Image: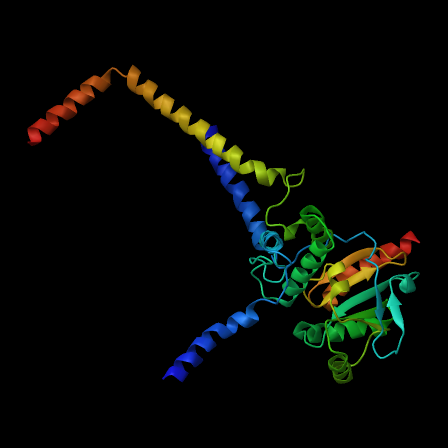
Length: 176
Length: 151
């Protein structure tokens, strides 16, 4: 009996394991920075001469840090969702303009609208590397203490806001 | 004709000029170290290419970072941990042996040992069966007879 059952069980075990792997997106690399302090940065603000945006200046309130660029096609896709989140007052949204030309960035903002409270310019892309960004758009949810609580890889959707961002925000307000 | 040939040769060489961003190394040993290090690291944009092979913009930036870290005297282990701190162990083509990767490392050897043990058992059982079976001699005799009859 065992002789027959054991290989069959092994087969089904393997089948279930492999089938689960099929549903996963190999392009999504989970961030190691979740529940760790956001990396320090100090970057010039777009269109605000001399003003700087840093990790420290944003402490005290949770915010979304949205990594975008004018050359990033998927950023256009998520732009209406990012705009909705910013307008709804759910959470403050800051932009990290990733390896972009300021004039291109401004043209893009003029065309699609500017939902951001402020936009930090990462011309070299070094801060994005510190954040473990490997493609844009990516969005980080950072809490009042400067801890990264969540990361959305790829375009943000209304479903992601409902299913991922809102529950974490609710948990965060329950904590404090 | 000569001119045409020259143009062809130059056209062939042209992509090479753009293929890899120029990083300037102080010595051959340094360049070798960089290349072997970059070959062990994964490009996150095109995941089946190494950092050395990829021409993705992020790979170029990361190559520059690796070079800068080398120049500032960091060891290979320190450079790798710089990258794993940001991107996780996924960037290493050869994952380190630890509690989380133990299954990954051990399973192949375990399966190999299991397969060897099972086949050895099966072989032994068959040999025993052959040795204990009184019919074996008869069978051999019959087969021989049949063969002779065929001829």
